[in-house]
Image 1: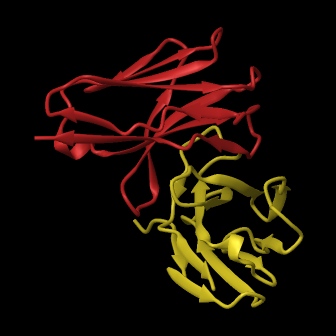
Image 2: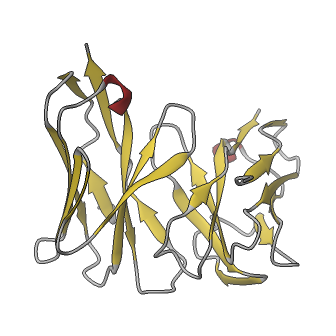
Length: 111
Length: 115
C-alpha cells in the first residue's frame, strides 16, 4: 500500500462544476500537507497548503482530517484553466527533508 | 527573479553510460531536493540537502545514484551505469528554509531516456 493514495481519475467535468478530490495518508506522524498542481509535461507548482482548521483561496478549499488521515481539495466554479493533475503532498516531522507525493488526480474541465 | 534551472533538459544515454544532471536552485535557498518522476506517477523523493549537507538520501534507488552539493548552491545528480529502468524525469526543487514543510520551487526537470 502506498504511503499517500489518491484517486487517479480522470475527472471530466463541465465548466462551472464543483469537484472534490480526496487523498489518504498512512503515516499518522505526518506534520504538513500541501496540494500541488502539475500541468502536462511541466513541473509541479504549489497550489495551497493544508491547515487543520481548513483554508480557502478563492475558488479552492482545502481540508485536513487528522483522525481519518485524509486531505481534501474542493474546486468551485471550475474553469478550463483548472485542467491539470493535482498532487497531494505529505511531509513528516518538521525540518525533515522527505516529501511524499501521491500519484495525482487528473482533472479535465470541458466547455 | 530567476527560478530553479536544470540542465540538460533532455538526455539520451545508452545503457551502461554514466550521466550527470545539474540543478541551479534559487539563490539563497537553504534546502534542495531531488525527485524521480515516472510517467503517470507522482514525484518520488530521492535525496535532500540542507546547504551542503546531504541529510537524507533514503530515496536513492541504488548505489549507482550519487548526489552532491559541495558549496551549498548548485547540485549534481550522477547516475552510473544507467539502466532502462532509470528512464524518467528527474526534478530538482529548492526551498528557502530548512526541511520540506515550506513551499518547494521546482525546476523544469531533465528527461532521461536510457536506450
